[in-house]
Amino acid sequence: MCGGKQFIASASLGVLCVVSSGCVHYRAQPIVPNQSESAFQQRSLDDPGLAAFVHSVKPAVSRNWPPKILSLEAATLIAAYFNPAISLARSRVGTAEAAIVTAGGRLNPTAAAAAGYETLSSSPVVLRFELSLPIETAHKRSYRILEAAKLADVARMEWKEASWQVYSQVRDAWMDYITAVEDTEAIRRESKIQTEVVSLMQQRLSVGEISRPEWNQSRVAASRAAVDLNAIQGQVAQARLRLASAMGVPESTLAGLQFATTEYDSPQPMKQLRLGRVQKAGLLNRLDIQRSLLEYAAADARLHLEIARQYPDIQLNPGYDFDEGIHKFTFGPSFPVPVWNRNQGPIAEAEARRSEAKARFIALQQKAISEMEESLAQYRSAFLEFQEADGRWSAIQKDRERSMVRAVQLGQDDRLALDAVRLQSVEAQQARLQALAKTRAAWSGLEDAVQAPLDDVQWIAPQAKSENGRLPH
Image 1 (tube, rainbow, N blue to C red):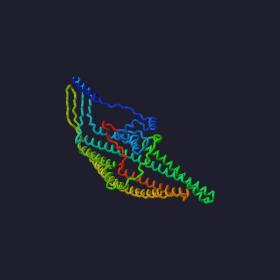
Image 2 (cartoon, rainbow, N blue to C red):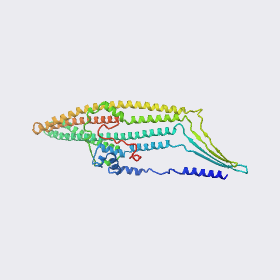
Image 3 (cartoon, rainbow, N blue to C red):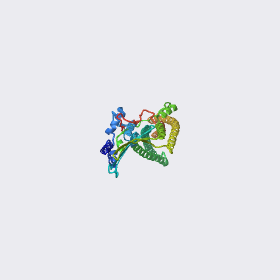
Image 4 (cartoon, rainbow, N blue to C red):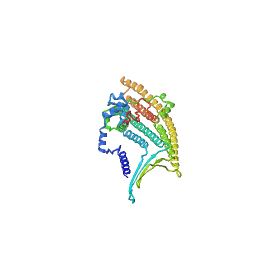
């Protein structure tokens, strides 16, 4: 009996040691809204973490950091560090990678112990100890790990998609900003000329050379130009706010910075954008297509797992009993008998999900091809419109306006005629800017269809892991 007690005590002590070792303890990480809001308001380009990040991905850019003139490349780097959408997607990667650990967990053995007594006076103590050792069959654990690993790959690809969407938002806000700045300069020039026209018309009105309706008409035109100037200045402020939001910083961070507004002033020539080249780049780079392939691989791994679950797991059940002074040892496996259920339902569901993933990939691929063809056609149309508007503006500015300036200098014409030609030049300039804005929008749409930059600006695509195995910022 003493031996049985010692066995039970030793077994219980061993189980307690195993259970208590390697435990994870809870660590509180409370959310303090006031602190997070204050941290956001204090973000700046002097942030040491931002400087380290820029140095890690773009050493050449980090030499002159923080920048005095903000370029699209610098704005993209700042957004890659600060924008919360990227942080959220990165957190989901951590969740998916933790799921791999869960999938790889082995089934724990179970232990049961019991003690009692009986009325037999010679040996009243009854002891029992049972151990159950589960054995997974048919490589179920491997298929679980494979599925979790593929889903983690999907999360990493979604992280890249989030990074691309942030780049796209920064680029669009940047394009809107420089377009609004260019429009402001054109409208400011128009307002200045219209003000001068009003002054000249007033002089002519005073000597009776023109009628009052003509003078009133010039005043209306000057007033309209002043209203347009106020409106476009509001658009500049709004575009600046959108840019700061896309970068993940408060608008005050951009105060005092100059902007490289001459970027994207000349559209890319059409010879560099052949349909075959664009489609090849898109089908190789589109992140949603790569993600769809990974989702199919995860669905395929799930099907493998459900098929493997047809085969029952085995439980080894060694036991020990101390009964009536006799030591009893038992062995024997146990397993469910798959008579009524062979996992047909989950297998059918997994097979249907794999078929759905395949159909989704094919539909997405065809959609991607159509989007690239449509975007390229839009860019061609916008580019031709820009070429025509640019040629007209150049002709008026270089020929008519310059010749009229010479005529005024020689006394062959007056300032009012010169202002009329200058207003025509401003009108042609505004038409050029509108066409340029269309080409920029079409260029952005083409990049979104390919999901990769088509120029020298490099998109900061996140890596799955850093060299030390930790997720980078």
